[in-house]
Length: 392
Ligand SMILES: *Cc1c(COP(=O)(O)O)cnc(C)c1O
Image 1 (cartoon, rainbow, N blue to C red):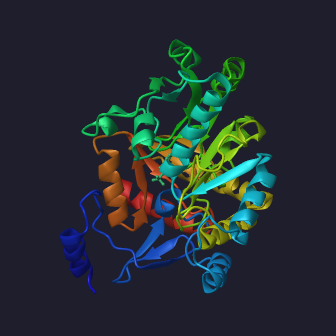
Image 2 (image 1 turned 135 degrees about the horizontal axis):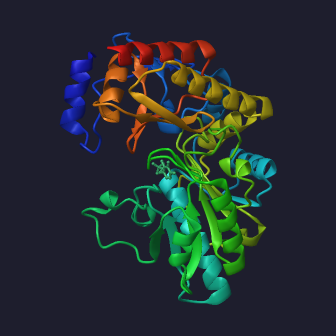
């Protein structure tokens, strides 16, 4: 099939919910991708923070192949090994108590919202169900996760919304101004990803954690984008010296298969009981086997390398001295670049992709989320494309 044939078929039959770049991807290795016609791309996107081990990772492929040959799915009515092993690995690595598995980030956040509301109901009864979230946040596309998302433009068309959400700026004063007897939790991203790679201030987050303790609000941390090694720790909350009550994860956990979920601490471990929550595909054996391969790969030296690679990439971008590029923000391999000059971040991303470097945008910034296994050579190739594109 040619690209033109593929594009025509996609346009004819696939719902137009995405603005796609005029590029197809056929296969890849490491952090390098190839189109049907053989055009090469360096990948600074990892499928929006998903393909943490890049493409063609032998350990990941072996884990999936072995599991799918045995059992692809059976439902949560029965015990299966991979989900239990992955839950144990996640709890052991974080000190958290329990895991619930779903399939996506939005679904993970829905579970997080349900934990917060039921925790509060069990303890205080009705009327304490409001969750505070932050402006510029992104928590997903399902109705409650969409309501939680603090960006008005996502709220067009789809009213009425789920009750019980209020929005604050990422300052303690603004959060306190939204406080009330009706609040049961505060939901935050430590680096707001879709909102423009906006890191929260560590002192503010620490103060917020204290406020949550005082008020018995659950501290709900959405690590769908920041989690699973992306920022140079298994979870970004570890770098913020936090002890969240619930943490959601998804994107990078299974290295490219659909999987998401939440981790809860001991206080919230027993909130969801049989009949209160579920997911048919949740803890799918193939996805959780893939997750085990991902987690097994992410030992401390691997995470240290994510940090070093992030530093290298950041320094490399700054050393380009491009007048169109401003500050580089973010942590580990989750980076945002300020864009100056007359071309927008969207226009620059389109040019870079045309020149063989896949990259993302978020807010007004360029956003880079390379596979965590990216090599120095691949980063150098990406930097060369940046340089050549921005010189032209
Ligand atoms: C991507 C993302 C989500 C939504 O994840 P889906 O898998 O697309 O449902 C939620 N929260 C954050 C922080 C994200 O980056």
